[in-house]
Image (cartoon, rainbow, N blue to C red; front, side):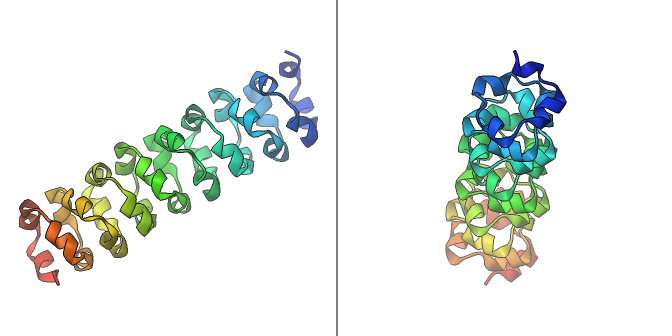
Length: 231
């Protein structure tokens, strides 16, 4: 109760050392206004447990500067509900290394809007395991720029259900090196519309094993230009 009674000026006056010794109960008792008043250096001084003790309302109240100040360990300690409570602006403010530290459960908790708000640098920082954990609706919400930003290892980690969720525009945006890295099972999972959406360069990049994995319906869906590009 005493902590919750602190004025904004008093919260700002707290030193880094004082913030570091706050208990999880004390941190959870802070109002959203008080949380937003914590200086960035003090935010970074909070223990991982204290950050994990923030309510969803408190988490959503963090300023952009405070989100940037979070340490990788603090971000890794966030609970899925806290991650889901972040605004798109806050998500976009996370450092790339922090995004890569999110747990699988936290990645699953990301909303479609949050995934769409990730910068290309953040997308490229995701681990293959994190990419594989994205829900199909989130994968379908990736922008063309985000799809281009995916690394070869990330594209190779996409599950067949995720790949099938991609729009034809997204499929056409996959870089040629990434196309060649797709498992044959993923190639076989492409819809006929997706197969027909492959660019000439992507068709040229297909490996012999990938071509052999195409289903008759997929082959029949190829345009004459695509067929002519086959090696």
